[in-house]
Image 1 (cartoon, one colour):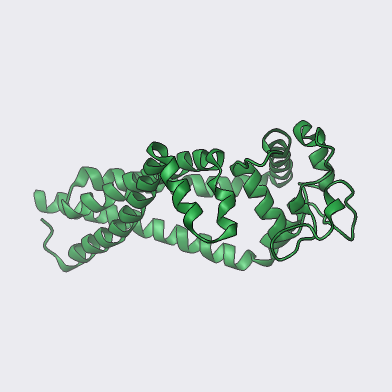
Image 2 (cartoon, rainbow, N blue to C red):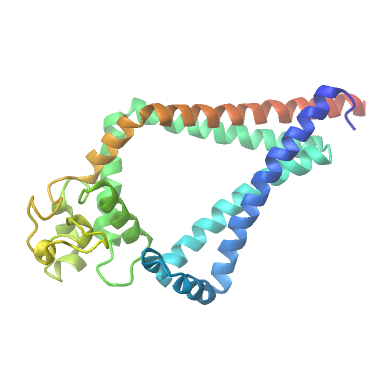
Length: 262
């Protein structure tokens, strides 16, 4: 048991912070498991909600894909926060050390990803465009049953008023889409308040007045990032600071426990 005031404060700060993450992780993991074992009840619940925008997310294919993401994210949050919370509460040197090591690994991965993106900027841009175009060619769904990729692209194009990666011609590499004689999906068109094309002919005859056919989403995303660069930098710095504090607190408390055990 730790006895000095500083160690006690560190202990309860770690407990409180990780308990909140633990509850959030448990909730995310629980929802993921619920969807895995009883998808139909969740779909039925969403259909009861009188919001037309939610109806797109009742697709079994979308829910199936979202389920695995929720379980993976929830399990990771659950594991890390469990080590931090129980390690601090039970004053377990082993659990606190493992918690600190996991935070170091996460921090190193974040720094490495950011550094590689800066150093290999042109390569990163090429690879990012390739992945985005591949998602359009292989996974964008031309049927009424929309999956996660299709919904994500539609939401992005509606929000940013853009079309495809470089432009609407990217959709012509999608064989399923070409078979329907469509040039672009409705989300590339100028839309009404209920997200319906203002010009019904837009999907087969897009132009600069009835669609965003010429405006690629990649450039729109880059523009958005540049506009919000300060917010992104501050958010990344705050996240890194929280992780560093967590690492220091974990190892300091573990050292304090070791000292008192001796």
